[in-house]
Amino acid sequence: MGLIIYQPSGKAKEYSPWAANFYNGCPGCTYCYNKKGRFSKVLGGETPTIKKSLSSEANAFKIFKKELNDYLPLLRQEELFFNFVSDPCLKETFDLNWKCINECLINQISVKILTKQTWWIEEFIRNEFYYDLGDKLKIGFSITGFDDQEPGCSPTMDRIYWMQQLYYSRYYVWTSFEPIIDPFRSTKFIYAVKDFCDHFKIGLLSGQKYDRQSLLYMKTAVESYVKPEKIYWKESFLNQIK
Ligand code: SF4
Image (tube, rainbow, N blue to C red; front, side, top):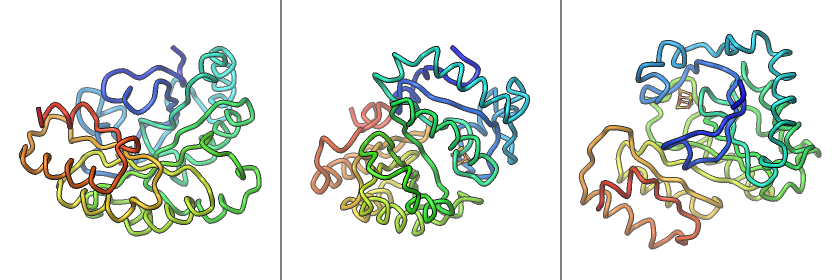
């Protein structure tokens, strides 16, 4: 695998068969998976910094273009996810990530992004380059419903407002309800966005044991107002309701 483009395994693979990471560090969430575990010192800092192996943004772009070319036939059949480490739409990470996203789109590679930032969307919607992409560009927002645990991120209600704007401007919009912190709160937020969201990924906080009845309630409630084909219940969730 490359320095930037790779095939994720485990829980991450449930999001995408291919992913790209450029930066370590993100000023966000207290529950972030990058801030835990044995690589947390490298991945989990508060300040986004370009990965040491890439040395600079200019060099990272060169490496990305080469790797894109190496995996082109495979990537064209699937999609590339931006990013598992850090957020692709932070002010510090935006330019390089979107330069690479544009390179993918020019090369007919589908892109999926996941963010908790909204500052960039107003200008994005006005940019003709991104018109009529259909599901070639899937724009995802993470929602837990707990802003106090997400410092440095746009408030949940802003994310919901901009999801709506994107959806009605004909972009493909998806949501990651992972990690669920409170199943009842997540259920309410899924209801709040159900009319302007193309796809839902729903998963639990790694290593946490949940109340099975609450999860069963959540699954039944969500499936009563969202079509099953729009929902992906992650293995972490399904394992705990078995
Ligand atoms: S936005 Fe994503 S990468 Fe950044 S701290 Fe939160 S969970 Fe981690």
